[in-house]
Length: 249
Ligand SMILES: [Mg+2]
Image (cartoon, rainbow, N blue to C red; front, side):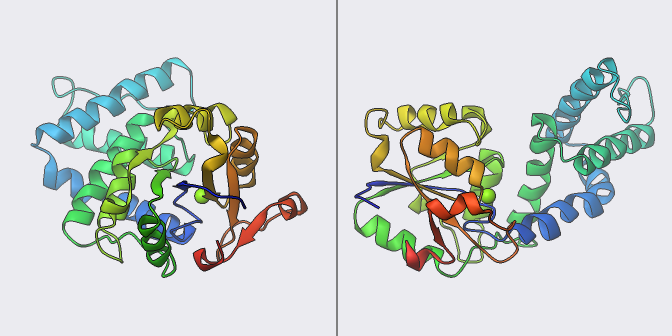
């Protein structure tokens, strides 16, 4: 690697175990949903979240998606009927791993309560904070780019097992800048942080080889994060630097 003054980090499989998302965050939503709806039923925020799901459900029914169900309004149905439609909607969308705004927004809304109440803590690997300290001391800027929504990213690093890490980060990016497997997204980020003519001074760390290719195409330097539980790396990853700890970067 040559000199870099900017570091962009992926979350899952890079600073956080993939199992935290699959075994903690997602089950928190699926197993707690019914009680959460009962608890927050009268709040304006929940009404807003359900309206987003309702609009999405309408589109899905129009698109003839098999599992899509209409979420009735309060004038059309009882609270119990609305709740059960919401549960059905979230359950099939999560099983299908849909990356849609309404679902992400709802998950983030539930996670917020979990993090703020101390039930959830974002798991961050032990070697991450020492690296953040070193980068910060060296005057490097540090950003996050993850397909989880920006609010969900902030919760994870703000309420982490290593404390509130938000002061380390100069900014957060999600798929609003584009998909992580497209080089245009990395060019877009570079532009937003004033580095469009200097992408080679950016280091991007991720576990996903397609993201590595996309960032490389945009001129970034890259490092592959190989953590326990990550998908196995194929032979095409051998041409890049691979680390199992941030100590090796
Ligand atoms: Mg990842």
